[in-house]
Amino acid sequence: MSEYLIETRGLCKQFGNFQAVRSIDLQVKRGHIHALIGPNGAGKTTCFNLLTKALEPSGGSIHYDGRDITKLPPAKVALLGMVRSFQISAIFPTLTVKDNVRVALQRRQGRSMQFWQSDRVLASLNERAMALLTDVGLASLAERVAGELPYGRKRALEIATTLALEPKMLLLDEPTAGMGLEDVQAIASLIRRVSEGRTVLMVEHNLGVVADLADRITVLAEGQVLSEGTYAQVSSDERVRAAYIGKKKNAAT
Image (cartoon, rainbow, N blue to C red; front, side, top):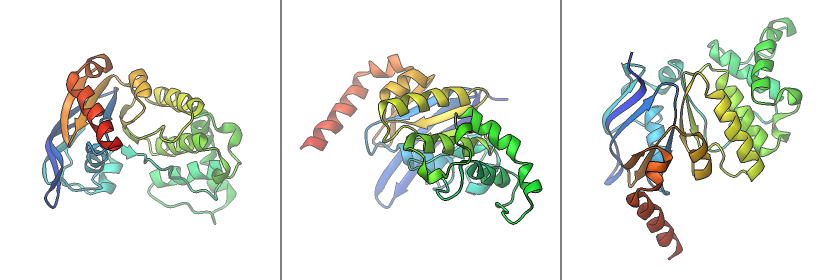
């Protein structure tokens, strides 16, 4: 068994004449939290879309758990245990918090939520649903309508529904985007807890979160790997500083 859960080799994506991702070699170790960072337009989200097969690569290969998944459709990749969250919270706002998790649990079983079934049948999911809600600190809100939750709690619920799919690997896209300091700290703590026994690859703009959580960091710029290492290593890399400062200057002019 390889020490890496996911590896890419020469991964590329081209849109017309624009090269969004340029020959990326990425290796994510099993059981680690690995962060993808970089200035806006660096290719981070495109890379995520390639890994989960929302986009087809223009070149290169993707290996997951020792298997070449380059040509697999997204649904089959998800069934292998690679599950992604999105920048915008993806929940059912009119369902209760518990029912959101029960939907995900039924999806894991290969069927959609069947509300017309007896309470006895649906109740078989309750124990696992409540255990997941306890893990993310939402057990006391199980009967609340999900759309009424504060933003940070919605993101916690989304993580619970993701965990319901029993992923080997979590791909978290901007998990703290748009949050205040208190919510950022809560979600960062939650990510650390749920990463136990799992592999996490995250795109995150909050460098404080990255510094606190990530075992390894890959910095992208203009679709290429610019630097890789620990936070101390990449933050002291002059090329990384120049990439971030250059983007900020361009945005201001």
